[in-house]
Image (cartoon, rainbow, N blue to C red; front, top):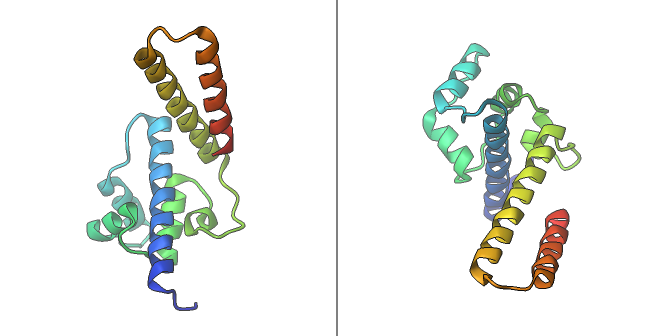
Amino acid sequence: QTKMTEDENKAAAQDLAKRLRLLLDVAIAESGSEPTYSQIAAYLDQRGTSLSRSRWTYMVNGHRFVQDAAVFEGLAAFFDVDAAFLAGEGDAPIPAKVSAQLDLVRSMRAAKVKSYAARTLGDISPKALQAISRFLDEEVTHT
């Protein structure tokens, strides 16, 4: 394992946090509630891996990069995804349920913007509104 620079470490920490928050969002979409630290820690504990609350907080907030294969394996099993995805390996495929969630979040954001534009602009012409919608839909598919 090569030593990371501070910037690489920060980027990796934020990247991991993004993936973890995405998995939390997927879990909320699937079960209706966000998994708690206690549930996650208990699950890992059963697998013989410990995860302190402060470490979980670092990971999920992107404050510090944690490289711990046992923790990654346990979290991957908890969220039912490939550990390689969680570890951020470049060639690891995005799990289907995660990309579906990303699409959903993107379209919800676009819908929010559209309804905000419609409310704010009030008596805007239907043609202009359609143009805005088209633009936003294209943005959604490219992000």
